[in-house]
Image (cartoon, rainbow, N blue to C red; front, side, top):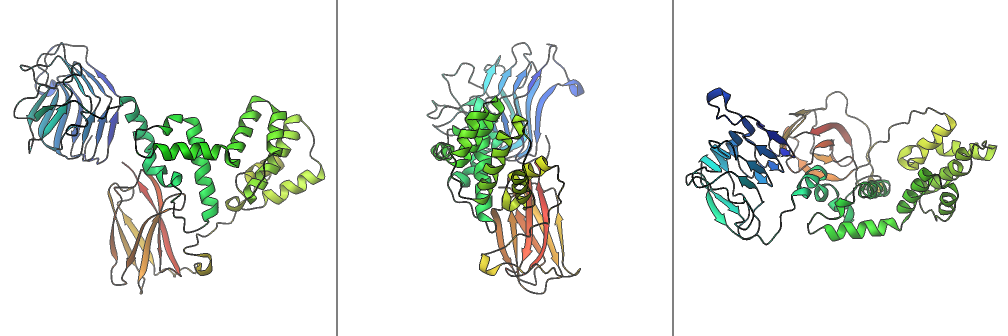
Length: 417
């Protein structure tokens, strides 16, 4: 892995069956991290490799968690080779040891070797079987400590995949900032997270301070219409149509997309799935829903179209910036306004070149649910803007250039790590 800040190398099994000690170009390496800051190596099994892990150049804030390094047979192996790299402390003093294990290493066969740019600490639990890395004195300063926070290795992988708190922390805290279509986007965000938790309940417990927020969110939404609609889906899949119909009838809808969904469910449950023909009233109601814009009418719009075999191409809804009383004039500047992004896809930083705007303007970056992640006012004489994207999770974002009243341009930013 080279030049990839924020990389995650996890759950790999790399085994060598030969016990011969290789040399030169035949040296068998497991994982090499070269110039990768803020990377995570977790839950990897590295067996009988002459160089299981190698760290090169700048690897600050890179962490090794729960890796199993077994070199019982290859007595010449190196364990972790710090090849002149800059590394941060591995573990947290008196708190966490990150539970890497070392089998086949001792004071004569070091589990950590090499010479870092600056020596740092390696914390380990002396009570953990094979927890001592037996480092070479020139590599790291070993610190035996009993951790007060247990490392949950199996959860590291799940946390890395979902990045729960970063993506959904503001949803459960009800602190999302939507600058347009707030009611619709809030409902969809809550529905998406609830369905995600339903499919993976481990998201409720990640041993972070926000666990209680996620549990309260889940139990609360389960009693709302979002949770009831989910139960209706489950009953339909089970073929229990009578129970699904009763539950659907019990819903008191308060929003247009809930009214639409309740109406379409009624037709699906009582007519379509019972092989009963639609009457004129059914068709009229479905048409009224099918010709709505999905942004306003919700997912029931697509279902209504499918039931009527309609293909409809919706007009694009322009994003409104600011309050409803000061919505944007969507009059584009003519060809004089341009935006260039580089690099795109971006990693930790994206540069924006704006030309053709003769007054002060605002640059905003939004995620796919409309939350503002970046807002900055720019003077008209400035045309190069550096945006720090290191805090953004991988995915697609929208960059908008406006003066708060008039909309100029928008472009997509892709974050890839």
